[in-house]
Image (cartoon, rainbow, N blue to C red; front, side, top):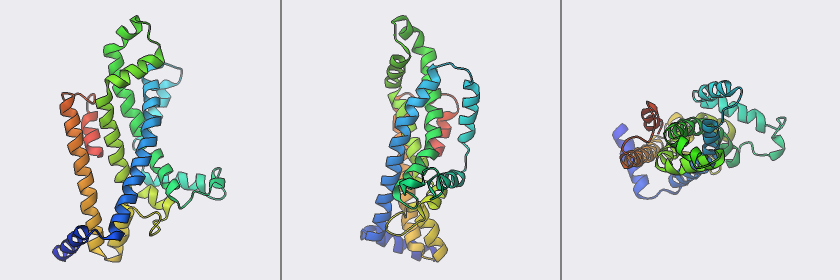
Length: 244
C-alpha cells in the first residue's frame, strides 16, 4: 500500500495537481510572510538586547530562552484567545483566516530569531565593539554595522526561521481551522488526509515538505562554508541546522 500510494503521489506531483499545488503555494507564502515579519522585528530586537544593558535584562533573557521551547499548540491557543470574538483583538475579525495564521507563526518564530540574533551580535560586539566605540559609534550605529558584518550569519537565522515556520502544524491548525481552499497548508493537510486514509495526497505533500527542508539545509551549509563554519556561536549551529 505504501508503494502504491507513493506512486500515486508522484503522479500527482508530475501532473501538477491543482489541489496539491494550491496547498503548497499557500504554505510557502504563509511561512515566507511570517518569517519576514519575525526577522524584521527579531533582528532589531535581538541586536538591541545584545548591545544595551538595563535593569531586568537577565529576567528578559530567561523569558526569551523559555519561549524557545514553547509548544506550538500553546501559541495557537493564546493567539486564538486574542483573536476570538470576545478577545482584545476580536474586532479585527482575523480568526480562521490567512492573517491569523501569519500572526500565529510570527509569534512562534520570533523568539528563535531574537535569541539567535542576540548571541550573534553579542559575539560580534565582543570582537569589534571596542574599535567601533573608539570611532564614536553609538548603540544604534554599532547595531547596524555589526548586523551588516554578520549578514551571512544572520542569513542562517532567516533560513532557520523559515524552516521552523514551514514545518509547524499546531498553531495554524487552531487559528486557521484547516479550511479547504482558504487556510489549509502542507502540515495540516498531511494530518487531515492521513486521518481520512487519502495517503497519495499526504505522501505528495510530505515529499514536498521534505524537499523544502532539504533545500534549506543545503543553503545553510553553503552559508556556513562561506563564513568558514563560524556563522553561529557555540552549540547554536547544531540547533539552527536541526530546527530547519
